Amino acid sequence: MSVTAPKGFRASGVACGIKAGGALDLALVFSDRPCAAAGVFTTNWVKAAPVRYDQTLLARRQRGFRAVVINSGNANACTGPRGLSDVYALVETAGFLLGVPPEAILVMSTGVIGVPLPMDRLRAGLLAAVAALSEGGGEAAARAIMTTDTRPKMAFRQLNLNGVPVTLGAMAKGAGMIHPHMATMLALITTDIAADPDRLDRLLRETVEESFHRITVDGDQSTNDTVLLLANGASGLALDARTEPAFREALTGLCVELAQAIVRDGEGATKFVEIRVQGARTRAEARRIARHIAASPLVKTAFYGADPNWGRILAAAGAAGVSLDPDLLSLWIRRGDGHPLLLFDRGAPVPYLENEARAVFAAPAFQVILDLRLGEAEDWVWTCDLSHDYVTINGRYRT
Image (tube, rainbow, N blue to C red):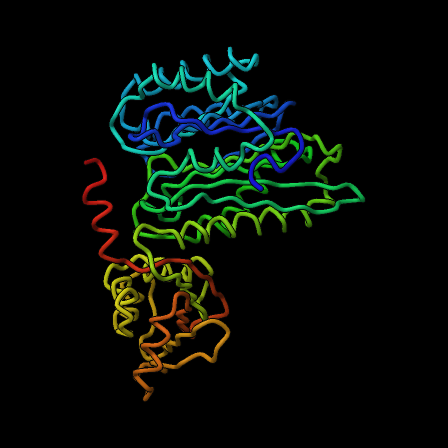
């Protein structure tokens, strides 16, 4: 179940020739009724044309959105004035084919930076995508937005609010150039609840903070990151103060599932690791340290080699730009729900069995816990290891 799980949404995924070998590379998601929408975007100053286009539309807090067009294989970033003119041409073509105004269509792109969109192929692809729209097209759409992903990422939630069934559906892509604020990731969330744009915007931003802003694969930030949320009201229920808590919980769970799926499918990744920093003065300081540890190449290669070289973790924590007292630090590692293994306590190493530590680092998923003993705040980040395959994938990304 994906973006077509909620009532009133159809989707398709087709091959239009951007990618070699006939792979799916153009997705279309369409609502049979107008939607309210919200979006969160990359904070990179070098923004792709579709990001700038969507930000302008959503800033108006207008209603009436009907569709999202997404292409993969080409980011339409760093393409000069032509990049934005191509976006306008894309929505004009899609609007004509769908019978809706161009300003009712949002756009996302992902792929190689610095290459203009092949508009002739995209126009032909849109014709095929419109013809292929169906309630069963969610998986094809999820596959069409993939780049170096090894598998499609989809999720859905169903809940009962005031006796009315409400559904959320989503798809995402991302495997490399992943770092908070945000990452080379695209996500589209659909729901059949009704909501005003301001409430949607607040909810989405709160939810992204607890999900997509907690992931890092390689510490590189993209030009194209976009998370969109569309609400078409087909369930007949409106989001209000009474229904918001349950809806927010479902939305958060949905986004956490997709965010973690991105990390687990990180380019060349073999490990899923949670970095948790506790005992901080503020959550912001805890997260800053956790992110610095999670993005350290030395830490991540130790994860890959199952080498419990915990000194790298402490070194990364100390270099995060947050003042701390090394004589107060304690460090544990833990696999699953097992007992934490203490490696370093109050500024000094402690005796432990090397084979036990190596077994934790060799696990497909584990946790690193760092206690600063400076306060009551804590935060966490999800990351992965850094393998030979990551270098291979990115060393030949364009060739």
